[in-house]
Length: 328
Image (cartoon, rainbow, N blue to C red; front, side, top):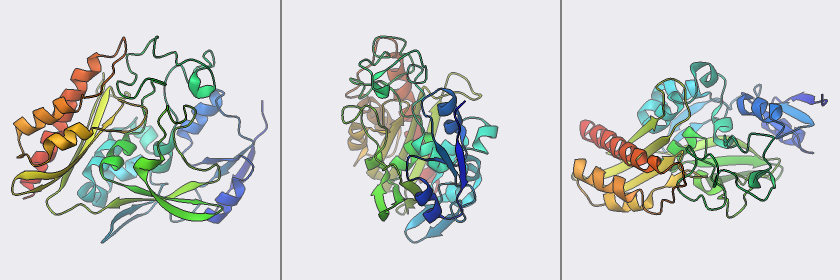
């Protein structure tokens, strides 16, 4: 058994300082425990940040919502301000994992969790993401793998909250030895063709200290839908988050993001373009859902996901359209 040092940080500055030398942050510890058990990481030191004050807050102002990375998924799902201002995020958090895990797992940890691909998680396969030469999923068991952007590595991004937050145009405040910086959330995710061994661009000693969700425009609405094989806890086959802005009964701006579909939260830009300028309704939702499948490259065992994704996109858009009409 490897010896591990434990440090309790009470401030962000302490946490950043403790991370020097390859230490790993521990918040809820849900994915961390799995990664250690699976031999994917062997940290010398764990830095517990659960005692850092102010990182579990929800603050609302004219810029939108300011969310702390230590908010649990359960707290996000139940918070009335989050549900009112960022419904897609509340729904995504509320449908993730099990009630027990939602009470432990944090927003920051959910955003940065590592892929759940069974080849990556198995010590028997030295895949590309672990520095090997092959993505075993491309020609292997791939029924739950990516149908977009899967030419190098076929993982699907595992974060439900990332799907919703990218749709909302969220930004992160990252704090490290050089200070704090704000970056668009969408920009931190790394596609396999850029670097197959990484999922995000955070520096080793950087941590998320805030998630900012911009205020919705007047008349805007959001929605989220997850579809798995079971109604009880299950990883999604497909999930979709969308944000629609409207004027005069027509869509003026749309954001449609697919989860469980690609190695990163996947912007369905063709669907967004198909919606813009169109009236709210069944016809525009169906056309956008079909457009969302442009550029799909299904593998040998997951072409069925295309029909599922199309249906989930349509349902999610109709839910957002209905919310927009009700709120008019």
